[in-house]
Amino acid sequence: MTGWQLFLQQLANGLTIGAIYALIALGYTMVYGVVQLVNFAHGEIFVVGAYLALTVLSALGIGQPLAGAALLGVLAVCAVAAMLGCGLLGLGIERAAYRPLRQAPRLAALITAIGVSFFLQNALMLIYGATDRRFPVLIPPVRWEVGGVTITALQVIIWAGSAGLMAALQALVMTTRLGQAMRATAQDPKACRLLGIPVDRVIALTFLIGSSLAAVGGMLFGLYYNTINFHDGYLTGLKAFTAAVLGGIGNIPGAMVGGLVLGVLEGLGAGYLSSQWKNVFAFVVLVGLLLFKPTGLLGERVAERA
Image 1: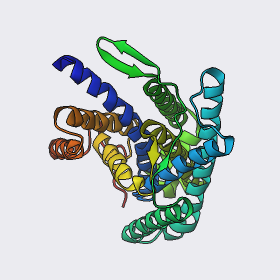
Image 2: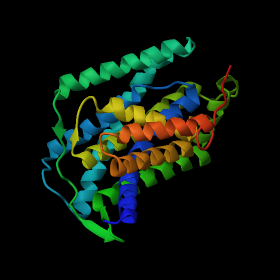
Image 3: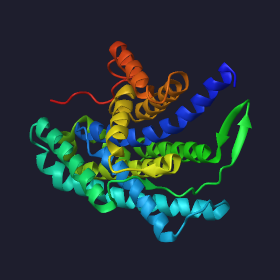
Image 4: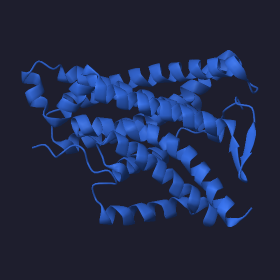
């Protein structure tokens, strides 16, 4: 493999994991944009989505690759189940843990978010066990050679699914009444209440949508790596949050760009250094970028509220 082919191969691999990071980062940036809260439990919600998808696959007895309509049907069922479960979980967390602290100092909400993260992590360990759980190989190992670069069917599915969900979210936020309410709440929740906008409902729906996207990210993560563990949410969630900051916290297109950039940096680090140093390489570059542009690549969308 030539140097150019190695670069393109690692670029393709990086865009694949970056698309998953972007889906998770959207939840972080949406919640922060609306309520100015870093929901550190979001990484665990992502893992819950992976486990729910695995549970559905186990219940259906799927243990071999599928093709055509059968594959699309199973993927759709797993995605819907994971999105429903994680969406309801996000609603419950917002209602029970964050809403009572809406007027409290931000440090209280931040500590609560960390507590919810540990609670979910240990709950997953008790329910599913502490050892790795293996995903069945659901997608046939179809490969295409494009200019010396190998592209798999799984990568194409991840790219297409992630792009579709990101485009749908952007359309929802920019063209619907709910999206207008989200953007208004992010700017001035007090004025929104005076105007009759149901702020609590808007915030709850923001948690639901963000958690649902993380659920799909969890399913794709399990399919890509073939194994999941209850503590996967810590590092992956941290990377997704970093991606949201890199793109511009509170900025939905920024979260997408940040996730893809972080994934590409990881891919290049793994290709040119080693898989053990890929995280170090990615975060060193990110620190350097943020030193020169602290608001992120596309800029922070939501101004600080008093």
